[in-house]
Amino acid sequence: MKHEDAHAPRTRNSRAILISIAGWIAASSWVTLCLRWFDDGSPWRPAVLSAVSPLPIFIVFAASCAFWLKNRWRSLRVLPTRSDRILTFLACGLALFFRLPMAWQGAAGYLTPDGALSGLLSIHIRDGVDHLVFVPRVPYSGSLKAHITAMMALVIDAPRAFALTSTFFYVLFVAAVCRLAGFLDQTKTRISLLAAGLLVAFAPPFITRYSLSNDGNYVEVLALGAWALVLACLFAQNQARRPHRALAAGVLLGLAFWCHILALYYIATFGLVLAISGPRVWKSWLNFGFGATLGYMPGIIWNASHDWRSFSYIFGNKAVGELSQGPGVIERLGLLLHEQFPVLMGYEPIEPSWLDVSRRVIAWLAIASVVFALVQAGARAWRGSRPDRVLIAFAMVNIGVCVCALPHVPGIPRYILFLITPGAVFIATAFNGRRARIWLTTLILFGAAGSWALWPAARHRDQERRRLVTGMERLGVHHCYTDFSLAPIIGFLSEERIICSAKLGPTTTEYFFEHRRAVEAASEAAFVPINLAAAAKIERRLGRLGVSYQRTNLTRPVLHRLSRKVDPQELFPHRRFPWR
View (cartoon, rainbow, N blue to C red):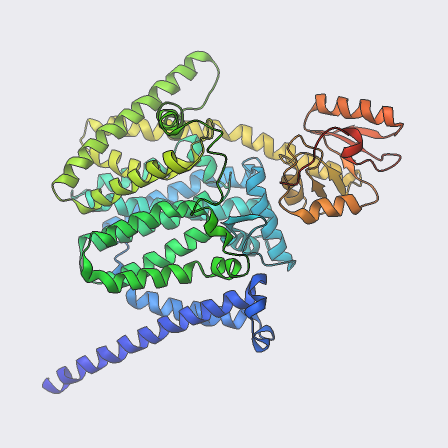
């Protein structure tokens, strides 16, 4: 017996060494994979590495990463009890099946021009055209979702793959919310944990749209950041295994920052948790920095050859929008409270008027519920609840940055989208009594009904957009001038069989400059105006130029088979046509 005990420490030490080696192999193979895969890694890529396929590097990375995670999973304590796991899987399953019909039948309907830009990246990755780190000319919008979509688009329709990828991230977010609520739910039934999961599973319409790839990369940041908050709560609660948790949080937030610059909300919050933990957590600081560097490695590779442009948005050299031309700080705070919070909590303009008023009333009652729950959370934080402190700190960081550093976008609360995380957790914890659950159920049903009510419109929009693209292909249109609201969507849905430039306008913004160059170099290009009035104006001007054409009314008017190619500059000689 003593002989066996003597060997036990040696065995544990040997296993710890193996785990550390696996971790270093995972880290080094990830860096190698980034250098080999991304186009911007070519200046630093050794000739030997260029001759190696990325696949074996990826296999080494995946295997070593899986081994490290398997042996560090307990220290991360993702879902500690069996009941927590069952309730979390239930909430995640409901979130998935609630969105599957929307993603499958309305994928193109939920797509926005900004979202289509990442969709175009996925087509390029799938077809081997290029492997970009960021959307062109947007060095804060990364290609993580585009890479996952590219793999799925090998077997299913690309827009559906894009929506399902976003749904996958959102399900991860639901799981993180359940875990966060579990920190505060001390009951045996764990009702608050399930309620928080259901609140975000059946979220209000605005959040549901964003969970289906409506815009940008917000849903990735929502998921990765929420799991970083889980690790922040674990870090604040327990001094054991802190370096491991700091490393994991760093990796998650590095990936999130690659996806979108708004991951700074979460980075600042975790930094605050580290800062108030005292000087003895220096190893956790190092691990957090190392993990963040690994997660953001694609962005580092890009920035190293582009004058670190991504960070110019952080240090004030560039702004996301024109703060100076919009409302001031106090006015932005007021607009945040009375205009954006109701939309975040479920208000959507709708007819008839009595239904619109009822939706507004429930949205404001939901806001009142958040305030009530926040007061309770503040009381718990005052008594020493560290998870409450972490979530309150995150909410304050989010609101502070939004008010002081970000522009106001009328009716679109995308910069405070992330507040749904502490909001759902606090509401579920505050309304956990038997009578209070009636109101909690009302909020869940309110969110589900609002999101489901908007699905028919998205499905109709999906069908319209697909008919437009297939109709243009039947007409033999390969190049077109249109507006930014249509150009990237047509390009993505046609998988670039139709190349569109936004030069016709009225919004002429271009991201893929090669698209405008391709259209201008083509021998012919159709016009796709944004509406009938714009089409009539273009027809009159074509008549003055003596150019004949054919008009086909699809879901949008298409002017094609022009007797000669006409540049938009000829139609509107006094208009400017900026690329950006």
